[in-house]
Length: 221
Image 1 (tube, rainbow, N blue to C red):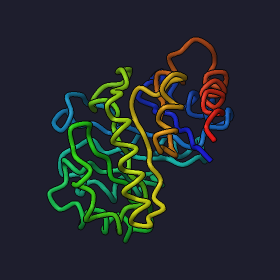
Image 2 (spheres, one colour):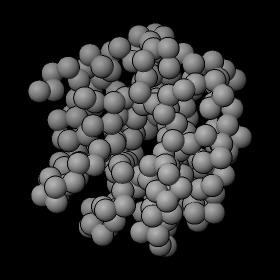
Image 3 (cartoon, rainbow, N blue to C red):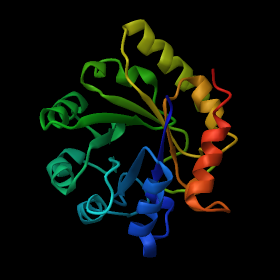
Image 4 (cartoon, rainbow, N blue to C red):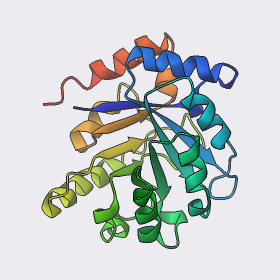
């Protein structure tokens, strides 16, 4: 079973609540909310207030992707706002193991994200405290970027590494996911696809765009 989540970074901010509801009604498996601070990445986006507002109008999983420095400072704020899962970047956590333990200790799922230039070896010592791993297939900071095809090999190697360790950890892929790249990511080993522009900025409704994405991965065995 492949889950598809919508990245609200690509939604119409004027109608953010409406578009979140639209995605939920269309059958989306979750919403990913990208939190950027203008330091870890060159952009500024949302805070806990947006998460709280969306939590009031949808029941789907809310994934909080913390693209910020010192993310451990804000974990409880986002939990209080309604987060179901929090992703932190390996690159922004001085004490990654401790941060993941802390998230799990607060009774929600802990995810770790790695950038395109970060090797998989950076994850080997935290697998026991990771509920999901997210591979960035673009450099973080902006929506609408093109998929970095070289990351498909990283996804495959991660799947192999997890299988050798006997870890049944989902692999999420974030960045440039559309009807052309979704199947490639799934065939490489991804089990969660995070799509932004292909759901919210493509021609057609959210429901139509989501249906096209699901259709594009049907060939996966």
